[in-house]
Length: 156
Ligand code: FES
Image (tube, rainbow, N blue to C red; front, side, top):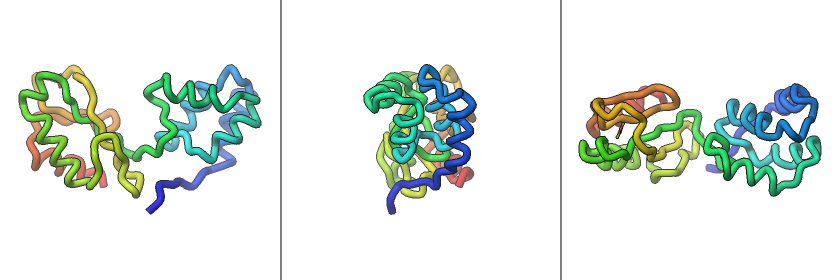
């Protein structure tokens, strides 16, 4: 299955109009679009180029520089497994393995139904509860393989 989303073009126009088609607002516009889709869909890029009169390279530059903005499809739920030292020694690798198996994707990938993106992240500051993972903004700790899979399943 191909990774695509249905673009709400009216919403896209509203976002661009909100910033009065100001090219200086490119970052904010891309962030607003990411807030809806978790990434900036490729279909939107030509519209940004035309309406904001910005070069394509600038759009790629923003996406490269800002970690919160991606041009690759990302899931509705971003599953971030902490791979920091404390979580690592408590079995973060096993958590990652179990989730790769469950979601049938590798770290850094997104499921075809665009529900989940799986990624490894550095310490998220809850070391005492390790191993931990975040699903979007929610943190889950004290995990083992089974509870990690159950946690992610609860979002589907
Ligand atoms: S190392 Fe995982 S939360 Fe700190």
